[in-house]
Image (tube, rainbow, N blue to C red; front, side, top):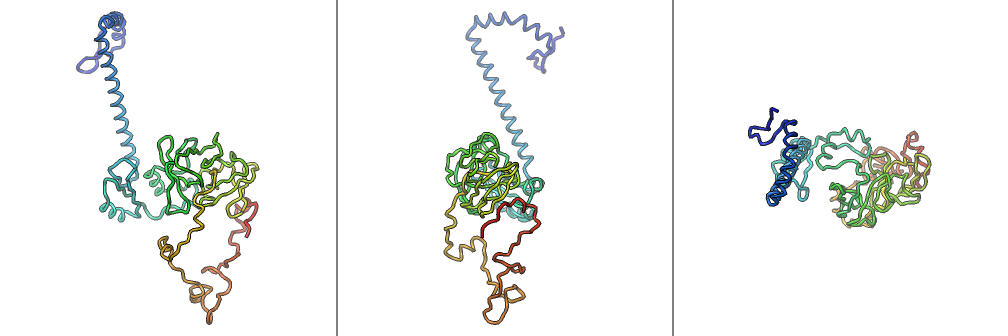
Length: 357
């Protein structure tokens, strides 16, 4: 039969024909022997299970090392990562340029502080298309580093872990933990609480507080916020503290939405919106109390235009205490009622009713 064995130790028969004939001839005799020697049979069974578990454990360790290696390969080239692998307690410093990155690397704590050097200013996403955002290298590096991106979590349930203060906006933000283990921030709606389950989806999602649905699936008259103007681009309307819009009607591929300004506008029905009002409505009651608080926000003292010279501002100059004439900007554009919107703007046809003065 010319039997063939595996490896130099020849512990396992590898030729299929020989293996099959030997198994057929030995199976019955081996089964009888095992029945007569119960203790040895139990020992062999336990040994087989233990070796199988060991093989599975080693395979998992190998796969984990492979995945970590792949993640390391695909991290941005300008990122100086920290040594710890958990997100809790880790810090990311985003600096502009390689020279600033080099200085930051020398002063950082390698254990929990990472440095990401970006080239120049980041793209203004408010006026950019999805394709342009995906092609931008700086945004791509940020997404890879922070493990985040544009809206792509559909029909995956998330739990609110915490409601947090954000110094860069007037509204509060909510930290979500999705059922697949990923964490992301969203703008918090008024009434959203820790432990609440929310979901974003296009099919079979109930219009409850915090859930995100397309305008085609939201009941008429519902209070909504965080509304998209372009499908899949992300929220661009009703995002600041205490603001909300109302879904008024639907006709064909457009929905009529009454915006916070009082304007009624048509928006595509496949654009997403979130149920509820934006949190922190008390923000409008905030009184700064002193000039220093404005300085903390980066707002420097402002010189009155009437106190300037005519060369510096259209309202400057004149004999004595002149009023400056009709209020206008530094570029000469009149203020207080002068319409600056272009009459030929394409989206004019989508505005059903202008806002009330």
